[in-house]
Length: 509
Image 1 (cartoon, rainbow, N blue to C red):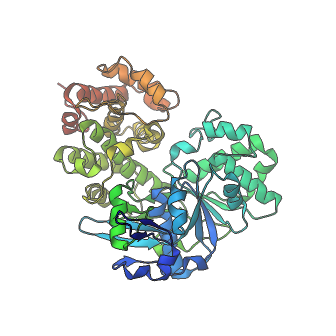
Image 2: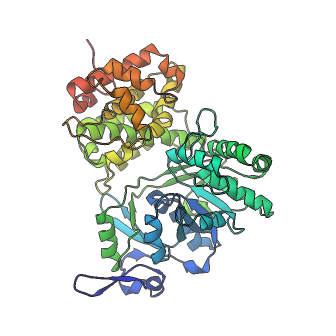
Image 3: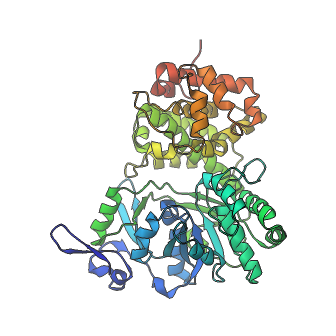
């Protein structure tokens, strides 16, 4: 068992398989341990993007299924860029603690479904071999929106995306998502191994269809003879995921150590709510995720649209407006009646833009979201959610706005959220504190806003002109532009909190 030295020289045990085999060393009172022996189950899933969200969501569903049904469905994680997750999980034999923080209490469980993590930047061969292995029947992904390098309008690859550009030049040494999938599928075809199913779990519209289009385009450019085989044989089901998972902090690790009685460097925390909607198309089989509460459906798109517009859209509004107004956490903003009221109004507007969903009450879902955002035990930073805005804004806010305008509906709530993003793009809060935008198009944004810090109309015009970001329907709509300008003018002249008090549109004489 791995261990480190405490300040007094005593050895501090670390969570690992030996600790688990001894029943949690008899010191993990109240902690749920895996209801199976992890090492008795083989790997059937490779997951790309081994961050906190996957460990709080898909890996937990699989952990539940392994306990209930068994099977060779453990997960081999692959980190595409850094090695920190591998360094944390591998000495722990893939084990980690999940802390579920409710408003009144925190529960803890040790998850055993992860068999270890490969840091692709350090061992690309091992990552590719895992994808090509005959035992791999499903490849799941949570790599964030910006990692794919797929144009959402056309479904074609973005040749200037760094990872895509590398993989076009070096298809036999891929570093990006699309290149790795194409290489692995080509290797399986060469070795006459059935293809794995590709399950995208990122917040992208029609995520399976979009990823399929990107993989096919990459294959046509690097391995034309492979493209038809992928088109005919590989399944890309869509999915929708929903669970608020903040970044782990020192407190996360400290709380896990306190309940376990040993060190856990890979602990994560999350909220009690969890939803997973998956299109049931898995030619090579799948875990019985429905036993863990997943909804296996024919079409995930209506659920995905609901979540993107309501949870993700409201989260983005809270992120941009809350950070500019000085609220560090989502819960802090929801504890103030002004932004809390604005968020509830936004959720109502977003719900009104959706078609009814059989079996789901959108008003109740909106109320549940407001309650989840208010959870005092979840420290989800507004600044974290605001990251990569140009990757998130189109599907969360701009596409719904364009659809509402087409239907001659009321798009003012989306205009306000768009203006909040534009105000965020200035890079300083209402109190004057500066911050980095942390956006893949940061250089373009900074050039667009330079010299226009007090000019609402100029800011709107310049930011809406960024190539490929705003739909043509919004660019060409004078009423939409006026709504965004009015909201942004209120934010610039009166401050974000005052503008929020007038949500969704500032009063005009």
